[in-house]
Length: 429
Image 1 (cartoon, rainbow, N blue to C red):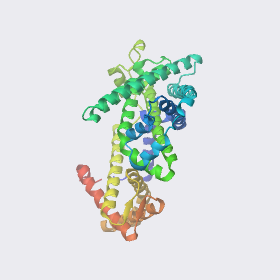
Image 2 (cartoon, rainbow, N blue to C red):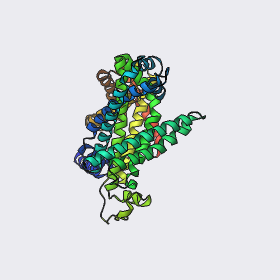
Image 3 (cartoon, one colour):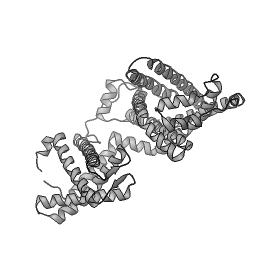
């Protein structure tokens, strides 16, 4: 049974309202109200500002012959080779004899920059949890948070160095990184919020931050070498700074997003969240058990909504895989951007099909399946050509190549649908 356009519009509007009332929708709203993206930029820039004097101090205090400790650490952490590794070495090369004359000034600048970073982080957590500045008390706890961060970061470095001496380093480093992250990103907001929020209420923030930081740590050696190499070839030494700032921006987004979701998790009265908080004691013991949700129907996403979202994501992945197969099989189709470009092309396919589909149904009407398949093939071929014209990362040799690529995408998408969802493909509507 097909829905009329006005019925479909009502369903979309209702779904939008449920998404806005869901935990994810409320978290996004809280993120927007606290200017989350602006805070990501400010925090990442503040970290970079604090790192510069830190690098100078470390190079100054390093023993003779070890002045390149910073560059070697960055090269190893990001798994850099070739020209990108050479650029990092050149950028952080400390001139001989210059370290002793700037060490005192650099140390003072480091303390000031580190305190400024801690205050920025404190302001972010206050905004997420709706707390206010307490003057000198806030400054004191910002200093305590900075000390805790330094101690935990040093401990994490020592433990990872110890784990690297054993076989299967990744098997040790992943749980170590996650465990240290859980303690660190629970203790840091606890101190920066001046101990006004019980640490149990902050475990959700700490756990989410630990998972996010661990995933970033796992992915860094995979994607950073190519990014650093490309930025270095395009911008020279400045490309190293751009890439480092981008990595810090990603880390800041993870921390701020996790802080927002942790605060929303703490205040939400949704049934499933209340059950989780009760089951794992994620509340302040002095406040007692959280109140049981009433018998009213809860706002937010339903199970059907979640199933719909999963289906959309599956369709997206299927289309991305079909585009990849087309680039691998059809000569003359090249993608110069990796996984992100395939996803972008897939989104564009979906948008165009969504807009052109109703027009095709009206034009084709009750004609044969072959006519409908031919129309879809022409639409997909035109979409490939238009995408190639708009994107510098997609190259298509000509119209024939576009049509052949569209045919491969259609066949591959159908086969993947049959493999992934055979039961749904066998039912008609």
